[in-house]
Length: 118
Image (cartoon, rainbow, N blue to C red; front, side, top):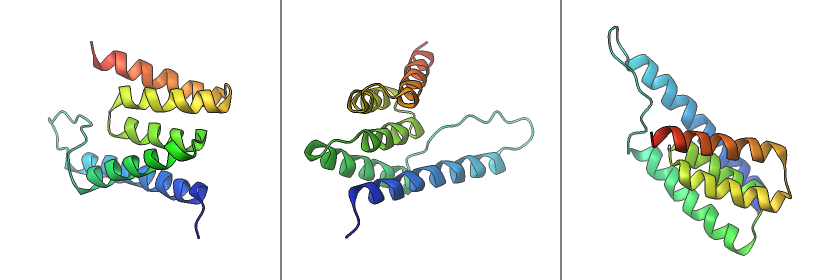
């Protein structure tokens, strides 16, 4: 039986690969003179990521881990849901007792959220 850590790692890789594939696809579609903006379309990948987030959050209610909340935060950053990412990173930061890498992720999410609301 796969442990939650392994499942979360697999999810993290899925999110990373999805993000890379999306960027690569968007770059190929851009033609000269077009302004290419990174917008996450609602497609099968987005729906799958949303479902994974819900599944992980349910597991985190029973057994919270900083690694799990980091994955939720990273997935929300990918989906450009910065406020949700902030909440996830805050949970991870509290569970980690002040991990500096998580703090950097939290600061970045706060910056992106503020930038988006301008």
